[in-house]
Length: 193
Image 1 (cartoon, one colour):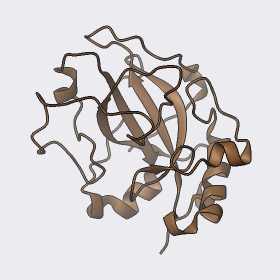
Image 2: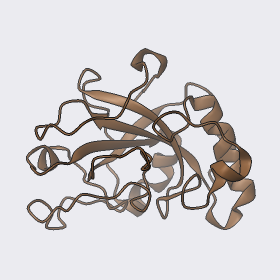
Image 3: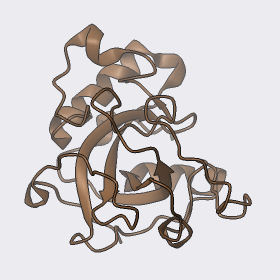
Image 4: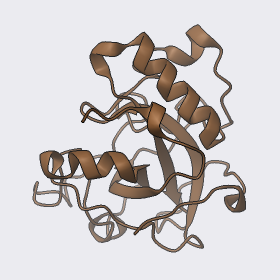
């Protein structure tokens, strides 16, 4: 069975598929899964390759929390129905989101889960279709994100499926980096397991 964003409905179950360390954002850099749009931090003191999954994300947040040097610790979530399909291919271990008191939800990117390409930034979909973005350069709500993912599947079929990807940032960074503006967490529901 082939997965598609057309199967998603508002309130779909989501789970964290990995963590990463990114450079502190500037006004020009969106909060995207794509490391081209939002640069990864240098991880010379942390990653020997043993922590990464098939998405090139850390499977645990602890190694990132021990880092120093001006990073932002981020988490990415995908639809649970998709992670069930790609679980073995990418070595995923779906995780519930850590305490909502410690993380801020920034919005949704639209991604090709096989290549981690962003339809919004790597394919310039937002500019071409006037997709409404929030102050973090992401789609504000899950209904709009589902619609954008379905649009991306029809526009860029060679990269289908596309799916909404929730982007989260750790509220307290040990290094004191300025965190981006956040949305009201009560508006967003994350359900895992």
